[in-house]
Image (cartoon, rainbow, N blue to C red; front, side, top):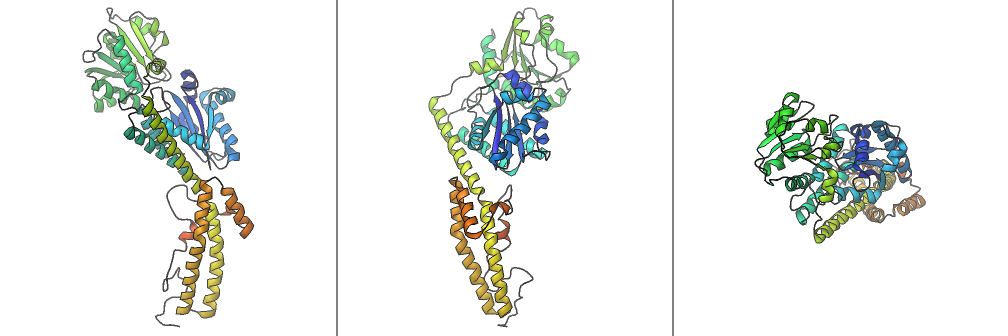
Length: 456
């Protein structure tokens, strides 16, 4: 099994391209799992700064086919050509994909280093994939471990300790651009009702905003403010709210965009306005910056203004991420030995059962036969212990091929033909679970001799 991630983020390409790639992103994971591709699991992580698709491919040889399948689906969803999509997406595989996701979840690859919002977005990406049935067992473990690592970075380092986020940095910029830096007397209109809008509302309230309104083109503002406070706006009340607003915050990324002429045509009596556009596809016309009295803050503005975290905290965070990624990779390699170990146990189990049947046929249901069977099973467990341990050790070292070659040379065993291990959980391999350890007088199944209470 190989992890493959296709990555487009603020650090590599412009946000307009990220926005184009994100169009229709919700259906990409399901589309690549239609049975015609080598992809066996997919999770999509789409935020205001990045668009990333994480996949599981069966083997290294399937990576290019998996990548092509994802690119093809993104092209169909976004309207971009496959060449444009391919050029925009960087490909990471194996340990590189693991390390990248862990870094992203910990906020080390964010426009605002150490920001905490991305950790929640990573969790929500997994939840959505699980709800749609596109997350395979290995991908679930990958994203869950990324979330745990992000939490560890947050608790063990000073990185992000000031509660910095894209929203908080944007609000700091807005305060710097306003004649009055305080928030208590400001009138704020928020566009959108998603998770980002919810985080924005919470931060605005923390800063003392009382006059807070919400507009949603989809009509969800009433339900949104019912649990978060504020005033719901509709198309009839929006114009009046815009005329008296001090700050606009765009978080919706919908099809409807507030145009520069909409603001220029308002009677604002010379009142200054700060417009914060946090939507990847822009809630506000870029021409806002040409309107007198209007200051426009974009995601690019936030990225340029984001403070650099302390070097020592950043080094410690990267060390934690690297250690977590290494440990996860080692566990994955150990898991890869399961098929070979199952094959070995199935082989020895079949030999054992043949010998046990001979003992039963010769001695019947006697105490002596039971003792022989018990001894044979105990010997099998002892003989398998070291090969099992060595198999996992070699897999952790990336030398599983040596182990599999040894099994084929010595026993004629082909591990690939064995039953594959469970995709999640910790169920024992079938060959082991079917034959738990027993002692004298304990029976495996109804087909064996029943205890008679005598020696035969």
